Image (cartoon, rainbow, N blue to C red; front, side, top):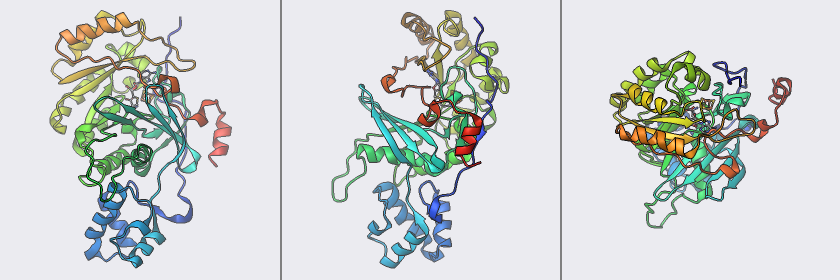
Length: 393
Ligand code: SAH
Ligand code: SF4
């Protein structure tokens, strides 16, 4: 059998972002500082700016209001001014598929007609929203469906925050004025584990998470946000300092030889370099431990020897190992490890003192499980010329 190999980055077509029609600036996804600048530029007196930011922020992120006319604590003239300059716009929900296990997958359309997916995973004591950071991905991990999508564009901060707001809409999770505060949160956690490599879109991801973590509004604590990366080493310290969320690493192999094939970006930053960067993360981000994600591929990375090597490699790093049974997609070149193999692997890791949960695949019937996301528009393979044509290039 010839083993799958991939280049570090695929031959992608990066499409520029189209400006919104009508020229109104979307307020969703602006940081407080950016919102302040925007309000002042539109004519808000500087002296009032801080107060106005607080008010508008609360309407958008606490109450989920989309219409400036509904912002009743603002004067009518001011509401009209806001309406002339700004909009509160979210990605458009094209479809929402619901799995037999309750998982909900949203196909969302963003500016330029591109599509991304987000997935809501309800569990007994929490609800996790898995969001995307890019349309497609420039990396080519050989086991990942997203990595086969040729069209790539970074999402804006607004499109990233917008995924959280769209899911809140769908789940009916905005508070209602006058009703007692409901402390149960349907979206209690957010994971950047959808389409794309978040650390190749650092600024937008950071700004979006600042909005999501803000103490007023969506208010998710930084410990309830997990960013997953394939190992973009130069951005790891920055993630700790500027976002401070929990970190997950798509580790997946215990030798450079195998990791080069599974996660080709390993050719740029190998296992030793990656581990060095990780050793500093818990201290820099003031977080407890790093999650190592490990996809279980039959006969590729699932031996007892692999498990033992893994433990040796991560020694000294506060860690949890998330074992992910491989999720197949049409044409995928690997098979899922047998259940007994996964359990034997988990057992070795567990006995070495690490939590080693085996992730239950969720939403497989709607292709919503890890690594299965790929926008519908891209599923039918398109020629470069076709894509370029549609993107108006
Ligand atoms: N690009 C980022 C985040 C998205 S992927 C990253 O790679 O970390 C989220 C997780 O799903 C990653 O650990 C990824 O390696 C894993 N994954 C990708 N394809 C998979 C598949 N087919 N089955 C199981 N897990 C997969
Ligand atoms: Fe990109 Fe992550 Fe998929 Fe690799 S696993 S191709 S980095 S989305």
